[in-house]
Amino acid sequence: MNWSDFSHAVFNFTDYAQLLPLFRDSLLAGAILGLVGGLIGTFVMMRDLAFAVHGIAELSFAGAAFALLVGADVIFGSLAGSVLAALLLGVMGVRAREKNSVIGVIMPFGLGLGILFLSLYQGRAANKFGLLTGQIVSVDSTQLSALAATAAVVIAGLVLIWRPLTFASADPDIAAARGIPVRTLSLAFMFLLGISVALSIQVVGALLVLALLITPAAAALQVTAAPRKVVLLSVAFAIISTVGGIMLALGGSIPISPYVTTLSFLIYVLCRGVGAVRRRRGWTVRTPLEAAHA
Image 1 (cartoon, rainbow, N blue to C red):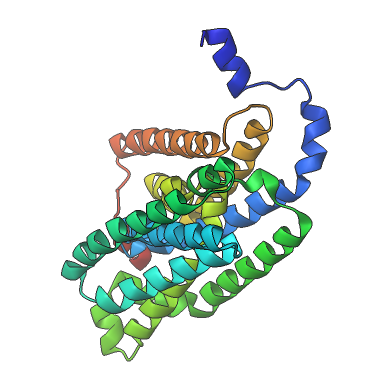
Image 2: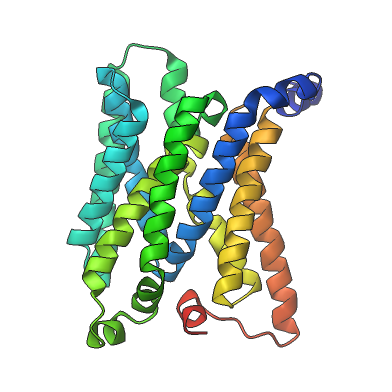
């Protein structure tokens, strides 16, 4: 493939004006997922669960692949796998030193199951590929309604436990000493995280879910330590990545995930550059836990 063919495949806006109105539901879905990813990603960074997100995504992929194999709803299968993995991590990886080993056990198991189910599936290859790379451009109004309702549950759950969860995330020992149910909050958060991973997989697929749940919050933490600003920037970066990625994907012939992940990465690089400049000028860099105390 020469450069002209490559650029035509990546960016081709010949019929863009006609295509854009047809994918209104997909753009709304992207905005909803960006909102959820930006909100929950803040706590993922604060609780040092970036690796856990990837582990949950592997079992979510396995659940979706199994649902595809047996003819069930793929989104439900993905959701079931995510929630199961999240609760397993919440129960088994209670202590920090055990967390990574538990995730390391779950990840290859989930990925292996997913590959097994996909190898047994005899349907369209595009369905298999979509589980890995995302397929949000096929969202219809019914799926959008279900997505919005599920996202509303996640957001409502986060709002309900926001203050105690922030305290428990910043200093679990002191929070426990003050009577805050740290373990219950951890399980509740892992449950919400599992749902969020399943939703995000619809955009970027199982392999690239970190671009929605980790990178926006990580980028926000590069430019500010104020908790509220971190949340707002994380949400803004996630929405820009998802909606912008979808809009770019409509003008090309490759899957949506490369656009979303590239935008997310560029935002992170830009924020890291801004953070480096501010550090040279005397701005104090804080960790996510230190930011939570601010």
